[in-house]
Length: 137
Image (cartoon, rainbow, N blue to C red; front, side, top):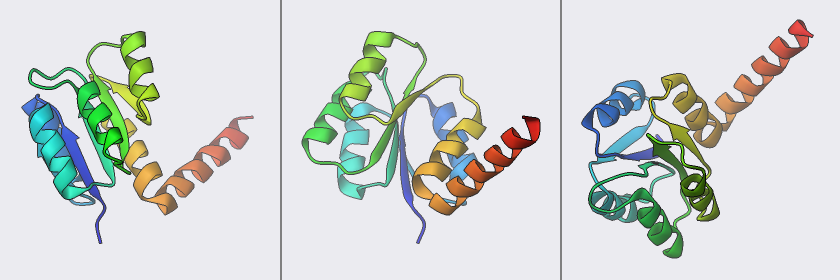
């Protein structure tokens, strides 16, 4: 069974990029705003959520707060176009696993997905990194 991932972002290009890159590996669902994302996440109960911070209807921080209050067990990574320390600190305090600054490299997203949802892939990546590190030492 494929793991379920939801991307909540008001930027259609970001949603399309996620779908093109990851829909063959994960069951990928998307929402274009905070309110739609909140409803989709509650209904689908995903394994991992990528959540944009700045959205016009409901902010990602408000969505995260409501999800954590409702007992959501999913891993949540925040997406942001502006790296504001106070906002990032608040997101981590609310339970986000981390944040990614836009524009981002698709490889970074792949690492997060592999580490969080495909433990065997995450272990292989970690071992490969350790071997490379040892060879360069």
